[in-house]
Image 1: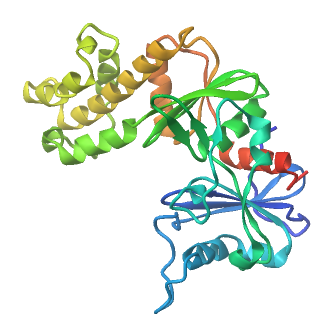
Image 2: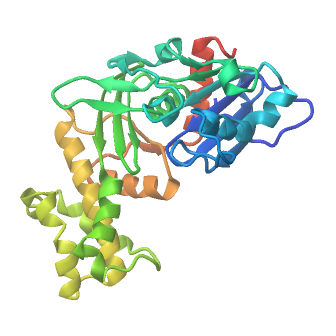
Image 3: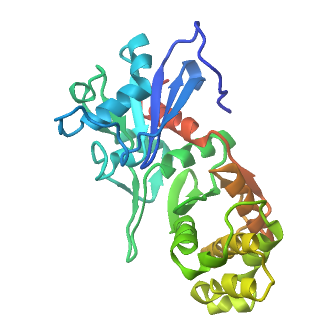
Length: 330
């Protein structure tokens, strides 16, 4: 089932309000019967950028209350008592209330059984806020996620499959292995943050051009390096080639930017391929910005993975599914 996106209509009754509350932004969704998406909105009030407090006020939690009021206060006023659920960094140590991690392997339909509450008195809206926990992968090099588990739950239900590799490209890219509807393993690559840091804070960025038309050929050239003999030198050696290819005239200033992007994503996919026991033969779903997902799809094809779909509406669908599992929606 794919959730339709429509504007609110008079005959639709609100059954759930869900929030994707991250570090830099807050997205709110209003659902009707059977998970129909009635309305949605986006605000800049992530946990690190909350609304300004009234003069002289320093009460803990007031910034979160103001952001929550802006996100859905009018919806709750029109439909008092509606269940309220949130996923993402709102449940981190820097969030409103820390929602303890659940250990992996973790059944996706059990995540909604362990929600952390901000009670109704503290939300100020007459209903408690139910916060979805993140996931912790124990080991010598532990790994964590917050928010991605909700997206995985959404895409798995949409595709109606039990086994899937889910890629979530972004600042910190996640690759999540799902088997028999359990999250069994996941890896994190700081590809997006590394790209931004290299462009802005190293000598590589001095000869680059950020604007202008994308250079797809340069991007694919960079993506292919990790799968070549030169790639065996490793990423720390390869990244300097984005400068030297510019100095020798092989890449334009804009081409250097796209080449570096391809180089980083190529090494990410090459590492993923090395970690995968059976290669990348299982179905793959990508969740995130469309243009970025399309670039990842290109690189995956370059490395032999062709059963790749770009998912839509995974976050809101996952929030609805977890609310159903928690008994907050039906």
